[in-house]
Length: 206
Image (cartoon, rainbow, N blue to C red; front, side, top):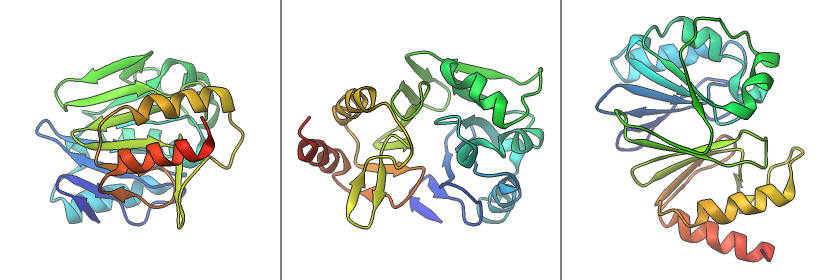
């Protein structure tokens, strides 16, 4: 499903929203879903993008929970040119939910990092997990489970989280400029997304 030029949402994976960014350097996959979702991602890339998994250069894991990351190793096995992007603090949790081969190529995030060839900024966004990250591409923000978007708008995560850290993270990402926001769960917002997030934060009294 084409969301905005160059950004797609995979149809058919399970567990989370999986996004694909079509960059000048290759494809970037953000979150993959539960075990078996690699099949839907491969099929979508081949049938809708006229590409193959060999065109994937990065697979970004926004946080190490089973519903967004369990199928990553299988997807990597079909993606010889891809590197896994993950925060240092979530690596051990990732290993508990998904097999991580010794020869896997990692981009380990600590605070802020730019994937120069893809022009994607990665920011540490703790609170939902210690190693949660968000990815910013042009005017689009991929926020993982830092915040959900339901029928009535923004919502806090439904699973356990560190409220203090999460509030600090929300205030930090609200200062970024983005027009669209794409969460791992729920709906997305296209148009004035940064302003709408700031209004939500204001409603929380933080």
